[in-house]
Amino acid sequence: MMEATVLPFVEGLLGSLWPTVKPVWPLIWTLLKIVLLLVPLLLSIAYLTFWERKVIGWMQVRIGPNRVGPWGLLQPIADGLKLFLKEVIFPTAADKKLFVLGPVMAIAPALAAWAVIPFAPGWVLANVDAGVLYLLAISSVGVYGIIVAGWASNSKYPFFGAMRASAQMISYEVSMGLGLITVLMVSSSLNLTEIVSAQDKGLFAGMGVGFLSWNWLPLLPMFAVYLISGVAETNRAPFDVVEGESEIVAGHMVEYSGMSFAMFFLAEYANMILISAMVSVFFLGGWLSPVGFLPDGFHWMAAKMAAILFFFLWIRATFPRYRYDQIMRLGWKVFVPLTLVWILVVGVWMMSPLNIWK
Amino acid sequence: MEFKTILFYLFSAVAVVAALRVITARNPVHAALFLVLAFFNVAALWMLLQAEFLALALIMVYVGAVMVLFLFVVMMLDINIERLRQGFWNNLPLGGLVGLLMVGEMAVVLSGRYFGLANLPPQNLPANYSNTKELARLLYTDYAYPFEIASVILLVAIIAAVMLTLRRRKDNKAMHSSDQIAVKAKDRMRLVKMAPEVELPAAAAKEGE
Image 1: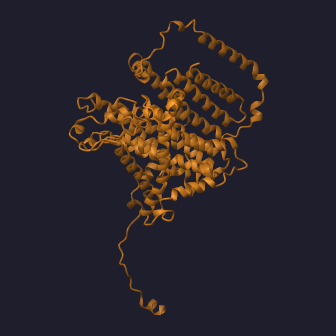
Image 2: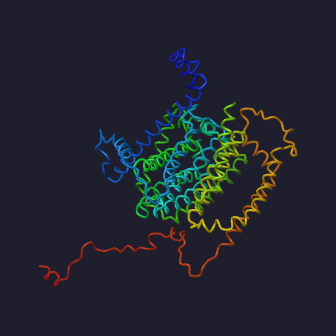
């Protein structure tokens, strides 16, 4: 879509050089699109950390960061610079290669998953048919970063963190995947763009109150399961036993410093934003406008993602940390049976005359 | 040479090297991670064959779940590598024989004359061809019963594995978390109404002065 407007401009700019550039143009264009996606993403990660500190500060009747720049707005830049300039320390007992590989394996899937997320019609890096499968596959790889880091540190607390992470993330992947199956059933597609446009149909969408025909309402239990599992999958409070300060200091990140530590941080926040994007696409109608008289567009997607991110911060400031066995109980004994039953309910519903997804 | 061909050689080279390292790496954790790398490259090869469902399912199931549990176990073992290497030469003839057999079988499959690979239709799939949909159509229509039976067998295996290893010790004092969660505040705590101020007895009041 955008390529058609950019291409003549580039051709004019390069003039006689164009024939030499032409064979590699698709590569350049794809790299440009990746940069266009990643730069705003990294900026939003930086400012999400700032917003988190501000919001939690206000909730706890504090001011939050307010010293660096106007209203403290340059705080994330200062933090990033500090982490960038600090020394990366390798523990002598660590497995050096895997110690370096750990943060890389944490951040690579967190960034790679964004390739299939659509932000508006046509605003997607790769509009593939198996988009949901790709998301599930890539997000299931994210746990390796934590496991490898925990093992390679060759130290006790990181190892505990890795053990906890592998059990917790696998458990919640199950309920996330099963919750997603109902979404796939009602939208009968694995393509994320089509999942969004499937939510634009229905009785309420015709009446101009589109937000009632989004997936969250008919699949309300799955919406709740998916959102809570998303919090557990990103190891955020109240499910942050992987890096629970009061128990195991910082889990897998204990031995990391400087930029290698920052990469875990970036991965965690990128995953948070990714989960919020996935929830908006699967359950909240992506870029669709909630009411008929307002235009659809990227702003709606951004607003929904911001609301879900606020939810992440809100529950972090509100709830105490779960006990580990209760996390496992919630995942396996509550969420998995609930999703299995709801798959059956939706299946029967779709076969009955009351089917609303025709 | 097509770009796809370059990709094929790249992925297969990495897959072969990674597979070799799985059996030659001294550290079992490294070996498991090399196996993950091999899985990834095989998935990429399947992707080149336009089998995107299989490729993504391989990553999801094997890399995302099976290998994580594998690593979970391998990381906790304290493996003595020297002891593992004992008896290598004794087992070599048998291992070599099995290896040769497998190579022979692969050669039969790959040469393909016996399976009639040459008679397969050429792969000219339309752009909107969905691998996932075709697979689902076969699984849920033609092969519905075998598919269901396979899943029931797997379920039986899960339940059997749990039942075989499940044992309740009599002296186990673990709490049930469902009981703990069901507790209400009034079960544990009694609120007593009291007057906010209590008059001190006369003697104590005098002592305080």
